[in-house]
Image 1 (cartoon, helix red, strand yellow):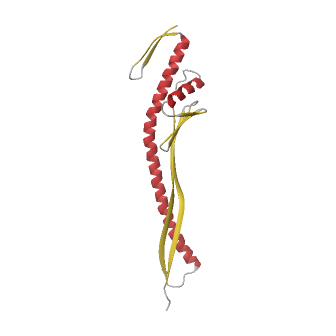
Image 2 (cartoon, rainbow, N blue to C red):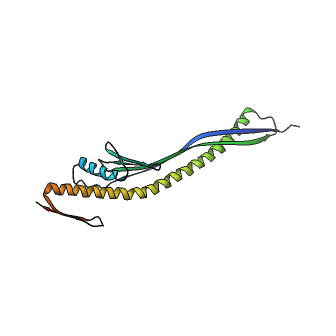
Image 3 (cartoon, rainbow, N blue to C red):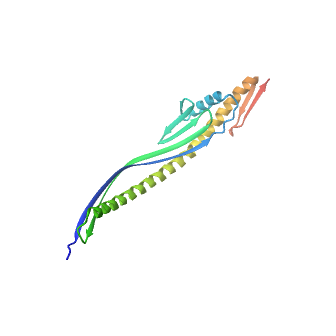
Length: 185
C-alpha cells in the first residue's frame, strides 16, 4: 500500500504593468501667412492654454495626459500612460499518491505561477481600460481648446494679412467668431 504525499507550493510574481493609449489628429489651420508665421501665432494662442513651446512643437502635460501639437504641420498627438507594480503570492497544496518527482513539482509550480500571471494580466487589462477612458475624457476637453486656438490664430493671421494689403478701416467680431475686416487699398 502506498502512502499519500502532500506538498505545499508557494509562488510569488512581481511585475510592473503598463498601459498606454494615444490618438493622432490634424488641425485645420489655413495657410493665410507663411508656415513660420502661422506656427508662431498658433504657439502664442496655445500658450494661453498652458502649452510650452519646444522647438516646432507645443506641449502640455496635465493630469498624466500629454498633448503635443506640431506647429508646422498641424498634427496633434494626445497620449496618456500609467504603470504600477503588481506583486502577488499564492499558496497551493497538491496531493500525490506516490512520491512526487521534480517534473511533477515543476508542473505544479508552473500552474500556480500561471494563475498569478492571469490575475496580473486581468489587472493590466483593467489599467488599459482606465487609461483609454482617461484619454477619451481628455480628448473632449482638448478638442475645444485646440479649435479655439486655431480660430484665434487664423483671426490674427487675417488681421496681419489685411494690414499688409492696405489700411484697416474697421474690424468687427461677433460672439459666434465671425469677423469682418474693412480694408482700404
